Amino acid sequence: MSLYYILLLSIIQGLTEFLPVSSSGHLALLPQITGSKDQGQFIDVAVHLGTLIAVILYFWIDVKLAFFGFFRLFVGDFTSKGSKLALLLILATLPVIVCGLILKLTGYNEIIRSMRAIGWAMLVFGILLYFVDQNSEQTRNKDDWGFRDAYKIGLWQAIALIPGASRSGMTIIGARRLGFNRIDSANISMLMSIPTILASGALLGSEVYFNADWQSARIGLIAAFFSFCAGLLALNIMMKMLKSISYTPYVVYRIILGIIILWISYT
Image (cartoon, rainbow, N blue to C red):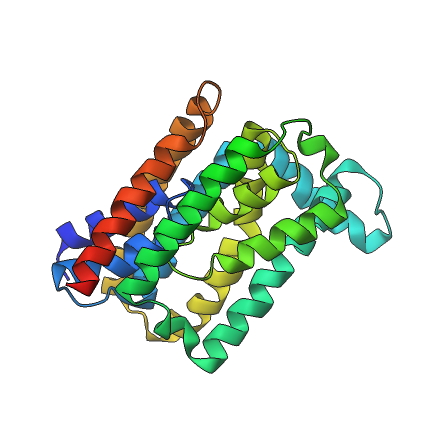
């Protein structure tokens, strides 16, 4: 695998992880479109590590609050702001962990990576994002986030295991349906990505750890660095754009890409 291809993968992962356009769909499509060999789990872990660092840095205040709140849970503190945020993130992550394990153990995680599945998911869930965003109220902010909300948005996040659905897109749909404003819907979605990426990274990382060598580690570090840079850029762009426009530009991109993918796969 060439350095150029690794850089391309890293940048695509970084740019698409937090935008509601499906990073997993783009990563699954790239080798099929270019005819290249699948990048493998080690590179997947590396690029996800890069985007993980990006979102932690961008939302550092909330991350620090949840981190220390998590340890306060062990001393019986369930009411402070930090411990509540930690509990909300744990609850929101449980559905995707359970569904992800089921898909992996049954082998369906590979079956749903076909071009047709990605194309339909890109198209259908992109249209759904548009209608939900345009027809939902914006009466709530992230301070109103409760345990029932976390579980409901977590169920939407589990649907994003389908490549092309988009983890950020599905969680934003869930948050917007519950009446959260656009900026805080994105904020909740990004915070939810942290334990989700950690869980998926731990699962994949445990499988590749003992097979990695120095050469693989060096390539992984390069991939992580560029996905970090691209992820931080994507986060800044999206959060600034949401102050003045809706999610419509991402919907238009999804529809166009979904139609192209379906046209290619069916012809």
